[in-house]
Image (cartoon, rainbow, N blue to C red; front, side):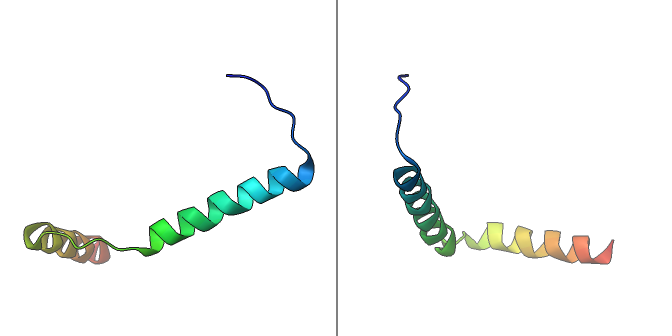
Length: 50
């Protein structure tokens, strides 16, 4: 991989864009299959009980 010199403003813009895209992806919550959702609920219950 080559090293590419970019100035501070471009570097900040790239980081900001990556952050915005990650936030958008993380906000989307895919639907889980019912069996997996049941297991996740059970895991949360066990975690809270301990």
